[in-house]
Amino acid sequence: MIRHVVFTPSGRRGPVAAGTTVLAAARELGVDLDSVCGGRGICGHCQVVPAAGSFAKWAIESGADALGAPGAAEINARPARPVQPGARLGCLAVVEQDVVIDVPASSQVHRPVVRKAIALDDLVVDPLVTLAYVELPAAAMDGTSLVTAIRAALLDQHGIDFGAVDASALAGLHRSFAGESRGGTVVLRRTGDPLPVLITSRPGFTDRAYGAAVDIGSTTIAGHLVDLTTGAVLASAGRMNPQIRFGEDLMSRVSYVMMNPGGDIELTHAVRDALGELLAELGATAGTAPTELFDIVLVGNPIMHHLLLGIDPTPLGSAPFELATDEAVHTTAAALGLAFPHAAVYVGPCIAGHVGADTAAATLAEGPYRSEHPQLLVDIGTNAEIMLGSTAAVWAASSPTGPAFEGAQISCGQRATAGAIERVRIDRETLEPSVKIIGSDEWTDDRAPSHTGPTVTGPTVTGPTVTGPT
Ligand code: FES
Image (cartoon, rainbow, N blue to C red):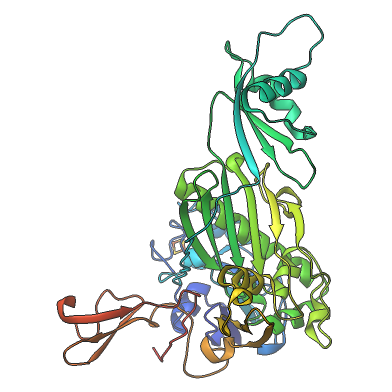
């Protein structure tokens, strides 16, 4: 019996015999699925996530039974890389029905290259949180509460007052000021009220306060971790948006939501999980604790914006493309299910139905509205936005580009993964071009770079803007 299998995000698909393991199917179809132990259930590198739902694009109804129930070998497997919730071991799970299977980045041998450079020239560091170390006098039997003592000390030692104390901060206050010197650090947040709010405290002195900025793209999610006291970028990371398994481009995902009741919740969970993983990765790279992350700024196109916030994106699927809101959204990491207890979240404002907060952020950074001369700002991602403007006015337009640049339903072109051209350089003397592809350390001319001219690196906006057949 023949079954049809589609692997995402590669989009590779084809028929396999029922009963074939996912790993064998992946190999048959040329899918990049990792396997260190050779399919013995030991390494855990082959994890895949079967997608459930109706996939009109491939005419596949992928149900919970599409992969056979785990056998004893899979149930008893204790691989070195623990099996993630919802994942199956590709070397042991077998194809029973037509199925769409997602290969997470962690299971790909050649992970997509996700790079987004950051330039923070001329940035004025003005964080919303302030850290202040204060020492309190010994507690006395005069009825003075700890908050009153902190308020007096803060005014006396820093000239700072605060308004409310966040309820979540109260439980830790005594612990923070328990030492002999009764010295501790309070964290205050400006909120728009005249006085800041005391949001948490730490024993002793600390100046560790971090923020994160994340661009949630249709294909990639990229973020930077920033030291809020210095403005230094401590870590940068990116990953594929796992929503790809529900549809390559924005409209496919809106269609998925329209055709699958509860699909919007699945998409929201997928993007929030990936965001949480990305933030954890940034923290691990920089050596920061989740409790030290105080501010998260998120941007994305309108559909990513809506799905992240749990807003139904279907009104954006057809004219007049009405946004739920074009204002900035203030919330907390906890409200988005992210394990950063003190982090506030600012989601940038969308501009119009298909011009999102990512474009608003790019506009703010590049400033066409500040330019005396017309300035063109182009962001080519899976969706492209173009801004043209000056101090007189700014115009915006957007259009899907993923099908053109990332190989959706066309024969030439692919994502920024193994085989895609990553760099191009031109020899100054011979003018001969040479390219380097992802997955290989060699340049095509295989020469030392001493005579080479300028190197043109890959796009700062991720994804292969220059692609070719593999
Ligand atoms: Fe090693 Fe599946 S290939 S656990």
